[in-house]
Length: 167
Image 1 (cartoon, rainbow, N blue to C red):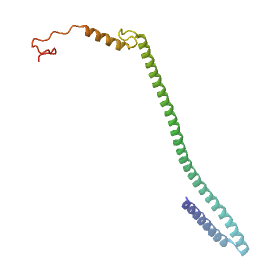
Image 2 (cartoon, one colour):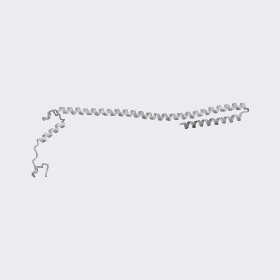
Image 3 (tube, helix red, strand yellow):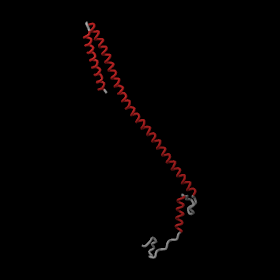
Image 4 (cartoon, rainbow, N blue to C red):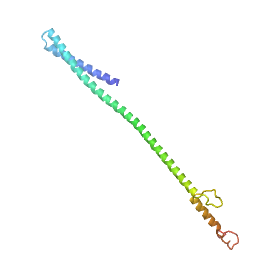
């Protein structure tokens, strides 16, 4: 940044010096006496100064606008990334919270359904009237009772007592 300012000042100074030398040469060549030469030098100096000042101002303005635009774009980019990240984190947090609430509600509904199912089956088991099984547990109990009431198969002819097959 400082090097570009020095470069700009050097260009402006050289332009001013060239304009002054050209004005001096033109004024000295066209003057008939020293008073006229002095007036011509002053006029040429003023003209060269004004032109150099305007040119230097235009160059500085253009460079300033370019530098400002670049700094503004960088600052805007950083601000946009920061705000976008913050918004994204907020949205993700809300979505996560919604998912947690939905999971909790589903779990509560499942627990309520199981509780209702168990309450409907209270007293089904004759040997344990205070136990309230689910429909599946009651069906499994009934199947086990039926299986227990079935007669055992006869032992095989080998006499080893194995009922699972030859042995």
